[in-house]
Length: 184
Picture 1 (cartoon, rainbow, N blue to C red):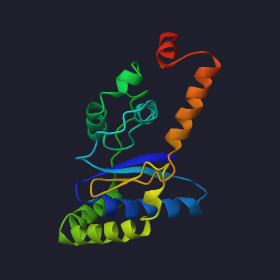
Picture 2: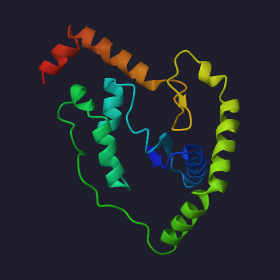
Picture 3: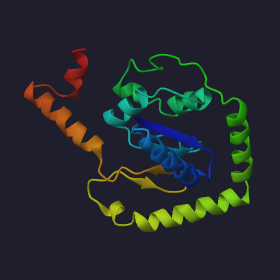
């Protein structure tokens, strides 16, 4: 299960750290999840405007934060140039809200990490991970983006491989992108 995590500006590395903890806890239960993107609310617009990225955005289903989801879809209106019928979610899941102890824990963590402690921890984690990923960032086939607004650890760009396969299949059927769209 891939997921996109959107957080406050200046907290993407802190959020990524919590996401990695969640990944490890889920793995102990036999569940594989992948934090595909960790974005600040100021970095919702995707700069790579490919069919692959359009498909990634179009297939998103919000688990929490439908307002942010709506903002992300609006910030990436270009998706319709690739997938003209993908202008809204496949279905509208109910907004999930934490209850009881989870609500209190969420509020306490947001309060604690929203201040100087969170700022220092985010900066520390950012610098630490940049040193660790320095060699991976130099890979020719990577699409990783690691900065203060986004963490996209796509060191091996699956999108490039998927699009190569897509174009090969189009060629096998003597089609190009435009004729494939017209065939729908």
